[in-house]
Image (cartoon, rainbow, N blue to C red; front, side):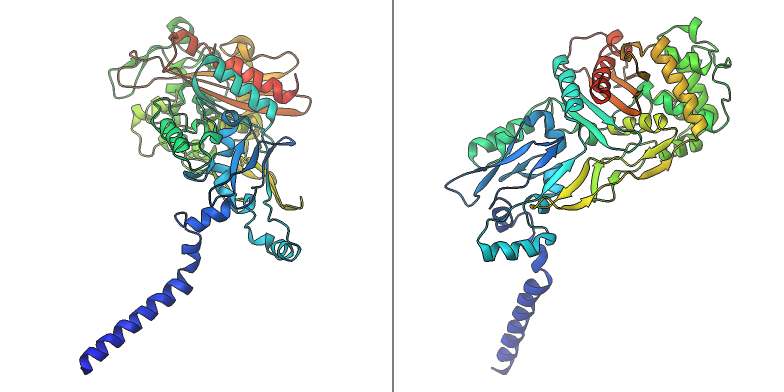
Length: 489
């Protein structure tokens, strides 16, 4: 009996220890766990604050009956802004800004504690705060319209080079977060249909998907060659023959413009006609280590992260380490094992347009309380001096020449200084089996304002020829319309 009593005493003690562990040590994590139904009930117990673009709210809340969740999220122009807002669903959870700033939007942030106490006394309903974005509604509309009219899978990113503000963030095909914002079976079926859709409408192409950047990467290769003294005169003839013999290989790589134009061309001419040989040769001479170091100064190999608000904007783009000589050469033309998000290529373009200064991209301008008081304000922050001002200006010279006299002419705007670069990116082992990905990067400057744009097009579902991709016929007009929207042209 004594042994049984001791054993039972130990069990009771263990039970008390476990109860106290749960109540005092684990209480916070359990109370805030995403699978705790009470958390979701609280999230949707009152109208959520809004996500603001320009001066207008692009979100709202709708009262519902017959459920523990009193309000359901609504979205205005949902498909156009989904890559910005993400979704806030009673059944599927949250993503992007809705998830990152849930405590502000749902009114549960600790900074609202005094107001909550006041609301209890006065009997007023709890209200959420607002998230003010940096998005330019005209630029967002221009990018979304351009891609949807093409019927293309793709992405558009626009940045303000001097500050890092994200002015446009477009992904197509997209989805309307409103259609599965509740928790009904019908809404669950609609969400599952989006998950199963082969066109991947839920994918955030500008931020979370990576692709080979193709010839748009040549602007970074040019910057690396100039910065490391491999090229000193952009007008001087090179010794790169075309087709170019890949190092340690029997393969030779030609250029769309032809060997007569590209063989031993200067870097400016090579940029104008997108000659592969000159950039393969430049990357090979710069070397794997210096190429990688330059790419990392532009943001490669690191998540794009907004430190002020603790918000990861984009997944990392990769410039691989330990490349062999042929692999290094291939990165010079944006191929090989190199991958990039559209956000990253917009960052490269913005940094070069900003005289080599890479600013930290950010999409949230400020956070406001229910009483419109400013809780936090984002300020421009220098991420790195990617290259010297002298190097950046030489790359600008080449990009602007390419816009005036080369493959980027479709992006020209009257009264605006425009620099641009077209790009194609091969995919698959047999490069001729599929039409390549299409890219276009550009910047525009006018009246003290500037904008940098990256356009990505996946032509998988399109009936289109290779020449329409490589000539910038698809991406350049979209970039042009976005630049015009920002610059007021």
